[in-house]
Length: 493
Image (cartoon, rainbow, N blue to C red):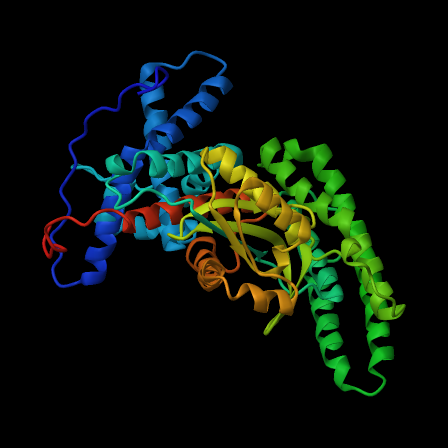
């Protein structure tokens, strides 16, 4: 136990109820019990609480009492377990809080079960739990779990240590939770946000001279409907141009009203029932849209009226998500996607050894292979035997670098003739056959641990959600790799 931490008090906890006849429940219960043992034996739970405690003590203006520290440690442990279980179940905050209230197994795993009463975290508390640690210390926790799986497999009761002989990696598009970025729909989004913010301000008694905000919402909705149906009419291009001009005039008026109400709130917020932080929340919402709306208007003008293309790096894909990119995938049903590029690297056992989410436009696959290998080799202090991936990662420079490092090159060549020649190597064939399973791993991560699309808003929150997804996934996979007990899957508690 760290010198910073106070030992947790021993608590009396009720036993779980006896459930008979539901194999799915018993399997889930067994997995959660295994994850609980892994959290304790690997030191992940202790490290998480220590990381949170160091930050909490550093922020304190006065010395915390022992009682306050124990309370914070218990909340930190609860935050870890609630985040893991919520990520595993892919629930939102409100839904998970409701599920937690009615399930004794979930209560036991999250450490909120008690003999007298069960105090369930609210959706706001769960949201605070989701941001309990930042992305950098979360990466350290994941690395600590991997190191424990490599060097302390017997203590974790694993069938075998984490294997670094083969390393497979690929990139994926992490889709953001935004609608398709139609130019004139962005104008509708901005109008709605500004008028809803104005409605909130006017509800606090701060009113400027204007028509009711609902009137502007009705007008922009009518124009959107007209724009949708204009495609079916004769001379649709001219009709679309005319409707867009009306939209631009309406948006200009809306921006003026929003700006005046924003200044009114900034100067007279004390006359409202809001605190200054609450008022600043509304001010930030207005400022962001006011800043981007002129660019959205220009973008729509260039594409619809001017008939000129707009470069991808200059496009506004969302008024609320600023770090998104156009990702050309060229796949059936997904020619392009909107989000960020995510790199995942796994071993033969399906354990994720490395991940990287790019805020800016991601470099080409050939440029990220060496960096990913360095993170694995240096972070885990172990050598990688072979690397397998698709032809996007293949290049002469990477082939030469792998040869110099003594790592077997299992990258799929770009040349069909060279691929035909390499298919005569048994080891290369095995690596390429196994590499196809990395596509399945990507789908498992997307649908089972990250969400499709991901609910997190903002790049920082998405990066943190990826870290929680990787940690939950690795704990789940390590639980499957634990040695089976002598007794069969029990039917009673």
